Length: 315
Length: 270
Image 1: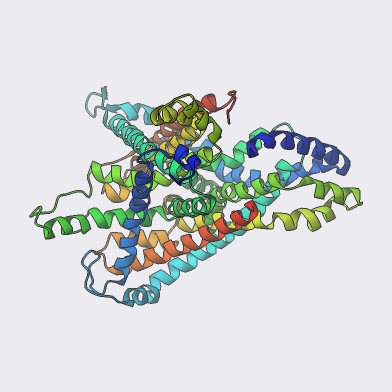
Image 2 (image 1 turned 30 degrees about the vertical axis):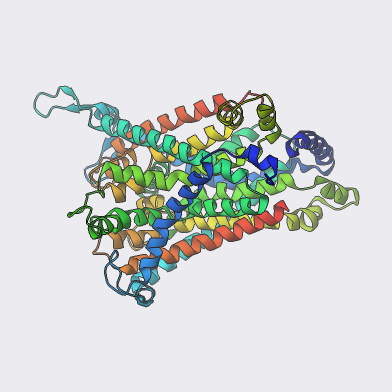
C-alpha cells in the first residue's frame, strides 16, 4: 500500500525540487560534500592505494618496507623459496587458511540464513507494537561491542565454563569437553557475532511484503510450504542477498572472533594479515594478503550488484 | 475459530519457535556475562554470592581511568567531526541537481562500510607509518581520531540522508517563495527538521567509535589504550569478574545509545 504511492511522490518531489534548485542556485550545495570526501579520500582511500604499492616492495627487517620493487609478496603467497638452491616450492599454507576462512564464512552465512529468515518473517508478521520491540531486541546486539559478545561465548564454552560445569555437575561427563580454541569455537563465535546482521536486512525486506499475494496463493490451493517457497522467498530475494552479503563479507575478514576463540592456533585470513604486521614483520606480504582478501570481497559485491540492479521488484 | 483469518494466513509452522531460539541465543551468553560481574568469588565461572565490589575495583583502577579518558577523547571528537561532515555531505548530495560524480561521491562516503575492517586497519597503519617516516608527521592520539572519523562518517550519514529524503520539500519551497535566502531557509526550516536525523547519526557514530577494536588495536601507539584494548589486555591475564564488570559497563553504553537512536528514529516514523 505504502509502496504503491511511493514512486509517484518521489518523482514529483524531485521535479519540484529541481525547479526550486534552479531558482535558489542550489548548485553550490555540492561543495558541502567536500569535507567528508576529503577526509575519507586522504585517510581512507589513499591508505588503500599505499598498501597496493607496499605489496610490491621488500620487507624491512624490523617491520615497515624498503623501497625496492619486488613481486615476492605475491609469490610467497603460494610458493616458498628454497634456502639452498633458490628454487620455488609450492606451499599451500596460506591458501589453506584462505579456503578455511571461505568455508567458515559460507557455513556462517547458510546457518544465519536458516535461523534468520524464519525469525525475520515472524517479526514482520507481528502487530506493530510487538514488531518494534522485536526490532529493538535484534538491533541491540547488532550494535553491541563485538569483543565483549565474543568474550561472553568464551566464558560459556571454556573447560571450566558453564556448559562443562553443568555437564560435570549432572554427571554426564567426568572431564571437560574441550571446546575453546577449536574450529567449533570459531564457527560458534561467527554465528553469534553475525546473526543480527542477517535478521535486520531480511526484516526490512519482509516488512514490505504484500500479503495479498500470499492470500492469492492460498486461494489458488497452494499449501503452506508452496506459499513459502514459491511466493514469500522469491519476493524477499533482495533482502536475502543483502543479508547474506552483510554476513559473508565481515565473516570472511573476521579478526576478533578467531583471535579470541581460536587462540592463535586456528587462524583465519584476518589474523594472518595482522600477524604479518606484528610478529611476522613482513608488511609487503600482509599487504598482498589484504589485497587478495579485498579481491574476494569485490567478487562478492559484483555478484550483489549484478543480482539486484536491472530487475523489476514486485510488491 | 475466533482467530482472525488474516493472521492464520501469514503464519508459517515452526517460525515462532526459531525466532524465540534466536532471541535466547543472542541474549543468554551476554546476560550470563553480566550476572557474573556481580559474583563475590574471584572466578569468572563459579558463582559464590552477590557483590558490587568488582565495579568498585574496576572503577578505581588507574589503567581503567586512562583508557576511559582516551576512549572519550577519541569517540567524542570523532563523533563531532564525522557528524558535521556527514550532515554537510548529506545536504550536498540530496539538495542539489544531480551532478557528474554524484554516484562516485556516494561510493566514497560508503567505502568504509564495504572494506573489511582488518584491511582498513593495516592500510591506516601503513599510511601513518609512511607519513611518520617520510614527512616526520605524527599526530599522536590524532591518528586514532582521524582513523575513527573515516569509518564514523558513513554511519552518521545514513540516518541524516534518510531524514532529508523523507522531508516534505514543499516547506523549503514555500520558504523560498516567501523570499527567504537559501541560508535562512536552511537555518529556519531544513535544519530544525533535520535535528532528529543528526542526533540519530551522531549516536551511531559514537557507538561504532566507542566499540572499535580492530582498527584501534593496529593503529594505536604506546599509551593510547582505549576501553576495548584495555579489555583485550585483561583477557590475557588471569581473569577475575572485574573484566565482566568492565564489559557490562561497555554493553550498557551501547544499549543506551542504540535505544536513544532507535527511539528518535521511531518518533520520526510516526
